[in-house]
Length: 533
Ligand code: GDP
Image (cartoon, rainbow, N blue to C red; front, top):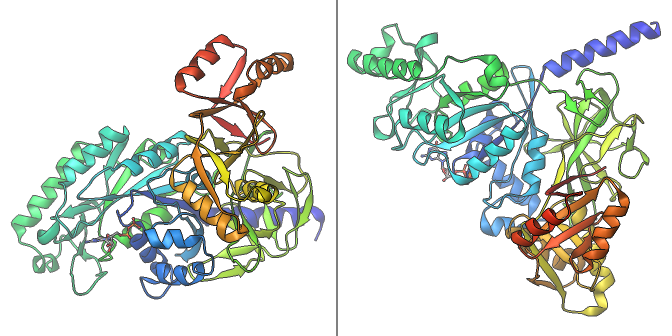
């Protein structure tokens, strides 16, 4: 084969594979049913054979790592991962976003790796706080959203009200795709008059086949009057909302709405079909140089998460990289933007529900785990030596700043290493004040402090505690004129700290102080986020 012909073959393989990828996350408030839905999606993809295994198997693996005990004790998921499964010839990469109410940077970054999201809403509760927060993150990037209204086997708010709430609270158009025929004790099933389909709800035999709405079969499930009433309801709902429009959905302006029950396996298949049919294939990613197309021949990806010490016996770290372009092959050498080093990727891992497996090939949209010893950090871009970095994977200004107290001062050096290495995972941030010796850690949610203390104790055998710091908020400071920045730093020694990359951070005692300072120094920029260069 000539070189040209070879390149064309590769390009067409890449284009084919990209078409077959759907990389999405589930966003929801705790308890809405994300885990149950995940299990059933995996079940449908044949990735697991019995619902209930995600948690069970996950726990036995996780139990090896002590710090995750917090997670188990509290029944929440602190870390996020990815699960890959196949459905109807499509490779689905399902990103797991932590469901806890403490919004973490981790969650945000996980969402930067998703091309679309499923929003799960509890039919009895409507839009809850965490759903709203996660939705806002999706909106920042116009991530398209499919809505699943869950738990319709229980009494809930009327479907009309739910649709209304989504439209008003989220300022999002809604298009009902499947309608709930009754709810709770009166639930008959879900139906779709447009395609003449009805899926009966049956407590005993879950996941029933669809039947025709116009045939005689339907009489088994409801009277003609009931059918007419449901039809009319859905008609009304449709008249009140715009028709489904694929482009509007893909642009993040409209959400198709599905009703169902994850627990009873009702409507889950319809939801997954919608993902396969409507959800976007891997999107082009913005970088420092250009928009990188998923179909480009050269491999490029970014790291949105690093998980250290998954196994307490080995100090291993897994960097989760989202591939953005090219055809990745095991053994490939890729350049890491942060350190500038080129490393061989010999053990790239793909994660399934119950297992991980070495991966030989991967394409845009795939998430691969790269074991390493700290060379790869959150925010790093990996390329085949091209000089580009993906943008939009920020650090957030922490909302809680605490001083670290060490019980044994002899361990200061150790502690520093522990703090820095845990900060590398991007879960917490560490700041070294320019005056004074106490490190300050910054987190976005309070739970992160507990996780941090527990991990330092179990993984590094150092006892630390946290105490209030005089500071309330932090901003990265930059200025076009380096002399101006120096003047600013010199004038505010008591407020200045360095982040782990040595970038200057202004710590303010109050929002008032921040506002006042910013006003006095108009040529200094105060940023609440910082993207790694
Ligand atoms: P998560 O916190 O969002 O992951 O929620 P889970 O999947 O753990 O579900 C929370 C609770 O709601 C569990 O007790 C589930 O059994 C229950 N649940 C989930 N889906 C349904 C459903 O469709 N109907 C009913 N009745 N309960 C559900």
